[in-house]
Image 1 (spheres, rainbow, N blue to C red):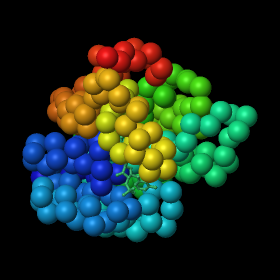
Image 2: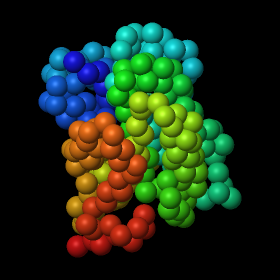
Image 3: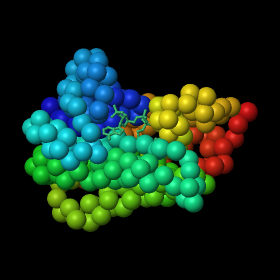
Image 4: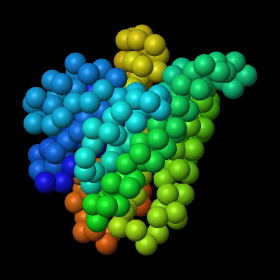
Length: 241
Ligand code: NDP
């Protein structure tokens, strides 16, 4: 049975991906800080829940010690904090975004890369964003982190050329999850306004992209998937009823 490690599996895209991969026959190892949620999901899909803070190197080391074999790593943990212009940037928020999205991806991949290669058919998926190649007002802390997360994956593909491991970037537009609630510090009204009058992607829509990329034969590397709602042309051009 192939093992898939999914970070940020306590919510949104990560939880939907864990469900999708479990239904494909993967053993899912779920990581996030909210262990209670992971345990509920693990009980539902027959996976394993392990507490993980990708912003903490010791937590990543302890997590990796619990993973015996690893065929698939989904670097999904992350998100945005605030929408402040660069001129009013909050250093603490910028650092937290960089830690979770960029260093988190690096730490998890560094810890599990030997096992992914040993598997003979490893696959790393990183969930970046259209913010990995677009910019928008107020978004620089997040777009800078996502641009960097994209660069890490592209570098890994060069560094492991010839090894049995693939790298896929999945870059979604607007997806209705807890993302906006987290970005706006728990402000439910501000989060709801983000999706007002338009149809965003669901977490399941993105999970299906990940499932499809993983299902390709092992000589096929799907480099990147950009997926947006029909109602969204760019980060800021959104059609609303
Ligand atoms: P959610 O807020 O619903 O989920 C984020 C997940 O990341 C949670 O499970 C959270 O778990 C986990 N997480 C955050 N920080 C850490 C950390 N330090 N250590 C471990 N886990 C962490 O949002 P989404 O599902 O939407 O986000 C998933 C990914 O998709 C993110 O990388 C996000 O940037 C990206 N994305 C989202 C888009 C959207 O519109 N929703 C669009 C494009 C990309 P916990 O809090 O329990 O640790």
